[in-house]
Image (cartoon, one colour):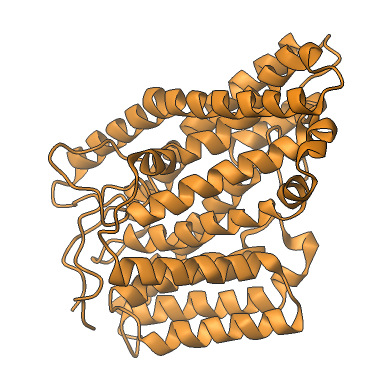
Length: 397
């Protein structure tokens, strides 16, 4: 039996407005994982870009070395959750080209609105600090062509690079949305003419799994491919297969075969990023199957909700705070570390403001737009996390 809840693609990986009287425990684990991962990524960027990072490294050399060299692999957590959320947002009814375009537009609006607000603030900060000895590193390469490319998440594909650290992930996320929705429509169109030997989910899952296998064995081993979604497909598809499997819409053997293939590819060519993806997928599977109401502290769930805003705004806020306190640091490793802690706390606070003033109103507008066009669709927000879906353990195929 398939889940009875119909999901609007508008709600793919959203940060929803909390609904009155609705418990949000089922996917609290995802919020916790996402929030912690976002914080670690912020600290990774602090070790990379903070003016006094070399001094701060002296306070905890091993931890700082790990943050600098290895913490970036935790971005794979967001890829797995993104693939999971994409499936949760797929409507059970056939997806037409028009509905897919609507979903892609809504996806763009949801991701781009806070992203463009951050971009405008970042460029303004770069202009205001142009005479300063210390300025946001990535903004020093401003051009109008690069800015236009940022508007459509094409900066990496066109070779311009990013103004802000970490925003390359958003570009990959949009590429996967385009791929997933296009394949969904194509499979549904083929089903209409009676050419499918099995369900649309099986065909779509099989197609994505095939692309994921190619990715883990070839594309993911080619660094020049890292500007395209095909480089990261092995991790994202793992999340999608996991969601379908937990809801009984794909047989267990498919994700087991996929996971074993990923392990084999790691034996041939060890890549920590794929190992992180596998580990987080296992944690999600165990948590959602056996501990769906696992108690998670409210502050962790809050971090999960603001994680996208934190991902966007931290580079700007960290840069401004560190510019302001840099004269105070001097040659003190302890002061350099305290400055980074202050920058981190300010970036979390700024992320909460961006979430409440930009993300939440954007979600409300999209929800109103969606309800005006279709009153039958019930939104499920997987990553935000405001989901009310059928129990994973009780769902049968």
